[in-house]
Length: 431
Image (cartoon, rainbow, N blue to C red):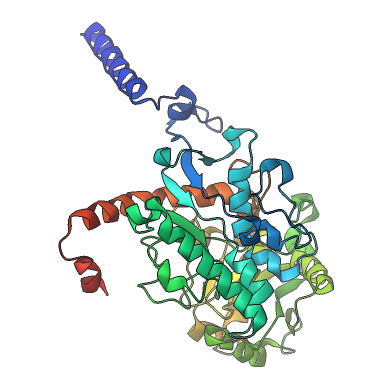
């Protein structure tokens, strides 16, 4: 009987191997990866990389905005891919578009990335639009009118015109196209023309459900602007060495949900010896100071900004300062893989605005629980690092994994749209 079972098992394995070889996607390393962190080997399925077709847009749509003295009109390549400017200040937080494009430009070790570029669009799982819409807004689009803003408007219009002419955009209605839009005002003039695409956003604060939603879009972390804490050593007793209980420095006059910052200032500023709640403007010097202050604080306050999210959360994570998140409508990146309650503390607006409540809760927070969260921060902070070249399990690879998760819904939507006589009737029911 045992022999029959063994023979049957071998037959099934051979059948699976034959089928996958026939399909052309069999990879022993990808399909049967052993877990090295377990005493008993565990078989883990690792899918092959996503195949991404990236349009060859001229440099004026992307890296040309980083170096406006470079007049080259040909698309950028791995050989002349520019480093991201070191002293870019707050613009860096919206630079996800640069790192995603760079991961496709990179022509080195493909084992380090979840997505690779293909030259044949017929082979592609999805399409990447290399337009730096957030950088364009930061450079040109601060006002809604004027010559500078017109430059941003023109770039958006040119991209939309280019996409409309693409047979692959037409084929899917843009649903399988990926467009990073991490600044809340990115692509503001033409955004309604690309609603169907997979948008890479930091939150959904300013957009109706018809424009952005979790069903089709990817939530990304901001790129952190403080330096990563690499020398955080448990032997130094991090709990005792971090003398500040709760730290915040930033703009307090914000829009929309961010108005809570002024209300928190009345409750927290100058009221407690172990709490620092300070008004601050973004500058290179202030970012350096914030780097030191976050490393000397147990908890770092992350209230909503102009939209529900804030770069401050990711600054806290790489500083190993336990985030205290005050935002009723925040969406968080990679939440299907990462449980933020393991290393963050959450308060509703109502709780945070009750005088004394939040500080009392943090003062009573058990040291062992804080240390557990601190260790978790050290273990997961690499998921929020952006690199060129890309590194396994860094933020860009996490984003490509998120894109992969959206594609079944995209294919469903594309296939249904091709046969429906009454277009989008289900969308009208949903909204």
